[in-house]
Length: 60
Image 1 (cartoon, helix red, strand yellow):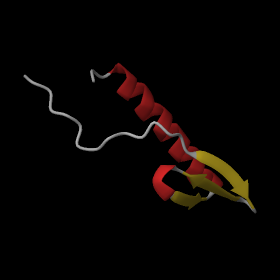
Image 2 (cartoon, rainbow, N blue to C red):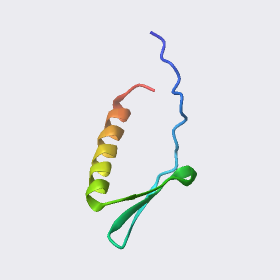
Image 3 (tube, rainbow, N blue to C red):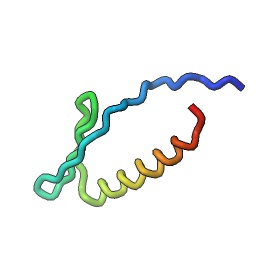
Image 4 (cartoon, one colour):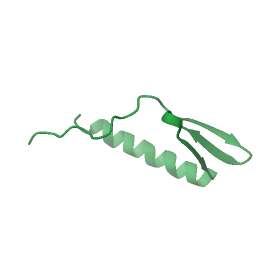
């Protein structure tokens, strides 16, 4: 089965996280900005790490 190209070009620029007044700010590529609670940021970090490990094992 032929693999289809990915419809979205993945970014090679990492986001940057910072903490401001008890809020975690994530500044990503292309102007993406997200404000999260520390708990939400922890869950997001864990989810990103798990997805990155899965993606590394997939053919591309």
